[in-house]
Image 1 (cartoon, rainbow, N blue to C red):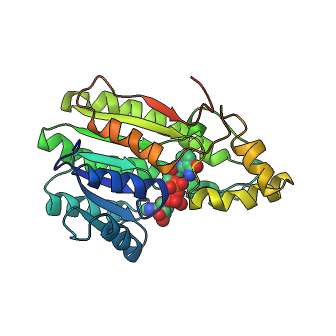
Image 2 (tube, rainbow, N blue to C red; image 1 turned 45 degrees about the vertical axis):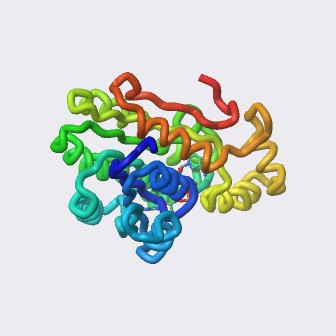
Length: 260
Ligand code: NAD
């Protein structure tokens, strides 16, 4: 058990990558708070991971809402006795060419990814500092933290921004042994990606099969999707690493799409 009795918050954990990270952390002995938009979905995910309700609990918190984030984080600290790990993972994708990108959609995407990361960090790091036992903050970046793709202006902007935030948190958190790192996955077949396939096919005038092969997986070494398990194992590595030796970094998990 690599996370015995650690307390973790994973945002956007009712689905996809966040859900697998939360389940992996529970299996490794952590108590996990599943933050998402819908109580029933968060509760259902928690129940799947731990039917006893002792090691996984669902919380409603829109990561763009300061009050909901603060209340949720305070409650987790109360119920589980502190906070050791934050995985800022909640995210959406919206695709448009820049000349047609609706301003409200640009702002919504930046807010979920960047305000969400900031607000959850601000709320959770206070507990990590106070407890004096260090902590691990993990941001869900993307290969799009490193390079661009067409149609994804706010997503690429936000994912690059998370690397700046992680580096700053790594510097500020060091004296409290709070580490901050970014995971940068390639394409993973979650609901977020399933939604994009037909949207991109329409925008690019291609078949859905071509979007997968010629756009999404084109630059991988083997034409394979990254899996939720691949990303969860990476999160476990960052979460369980004990020292400041590994902080301020970003790790690409993508079947070789974008080599540093
Ligand atoms: P997903 O759609 O399966 O899950 C995202 C979850 O975030 C959902 O449960 C959703 O309800 C929640 N969410 C959305 N807005 C929220 C908000 N304001 N507050 C709280 N929760 C909110 O998507 P996923 O593919 O698992 O994506 C998770 C993260 O991984 C995102 O940050 C995404 O950008 C990143 N990512 C995904 C891929 C991929 O290919 N799927 C690749 C790289 C990075």
